[in-house]
Length: 183
Image 1 (spheres, one colour):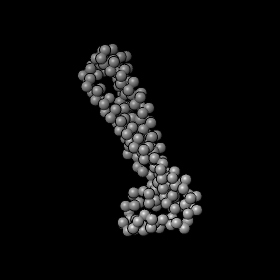
Image 2 (spheres, one colour):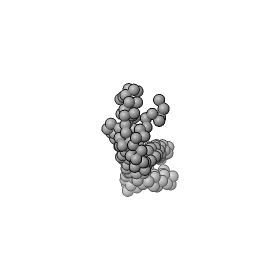
Image 3 (cartoon, helix red, strand yellow):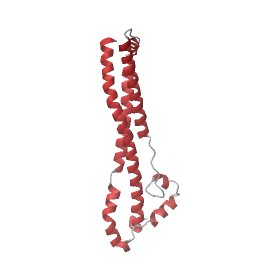
Image 4 (cartoon, one colour):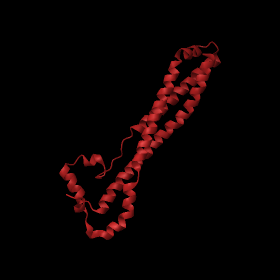
């Protein structure tokens, strides 16, 4: 079966009318947004791990400062440490939530792999051959819309994690300076 057998040339005017929409729908690089959000999320998770690992390297000094006889310094140090841990935990939670965000449902669209896998090979070929230009465009538009929803959800979570990590890095550097000076 060649690709030409699936094209109905009786509706050339309809195809010409849809050409611009079809080009835009089929060649919009939505997947790049999904992978960019995932890369940012993994970067944040790695950064959280690195910050905690470096902090744990100075655990003996941290314990010494947390047991300081001067109460105001001890309270400020421990409070800063708690705030740092909360910020890092929140950044990790948001980054992970963005990384594992589920794909929204794409009802009936043959552009979505989970809908395709429910069909047999012959049923899939038959369903694809039965699509007209408008139905194919509608299926791709549904898929693109779901990709956009997922991208927006991922970036919302990742951007929240980035806000947390920015503050956490500043606080982490301050704590390391205190540890280096007094620990």
